[in-house]
Amino acid sequence: MKLTKIAALITLLISINLNASKLNNIDKIVEAINITKDIELKIALVEQLDKQLQGMEKKELFEALNLINKKLIVAEEKKENNI
Image 1: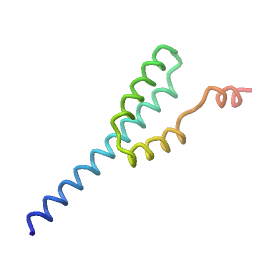
Image 2: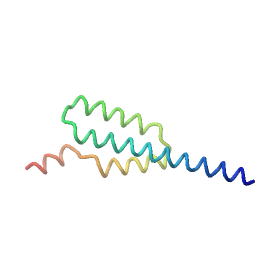
Image 3: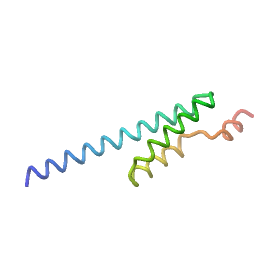
Image 4: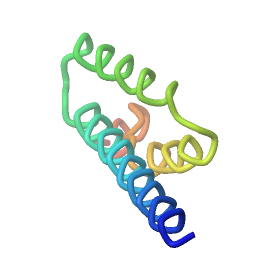
């Protein structure tokens, strides 16, 4: 019984760490998209972001989409700020 609880705890900690790692990767990709001015590189980064999102479970995907919505700078927003 104790061994089962320890194994369950280790599994939970590993999944939390993997989830944080995935969100960290998404955060880095979004930052790179925001920084780069090269359109071809932006397209490649968006494709990479899409691949990261495809492998996620529902809860992770929801968290990732919230992160993207908060951090991703849309081109129209950039134009408005420059005016």
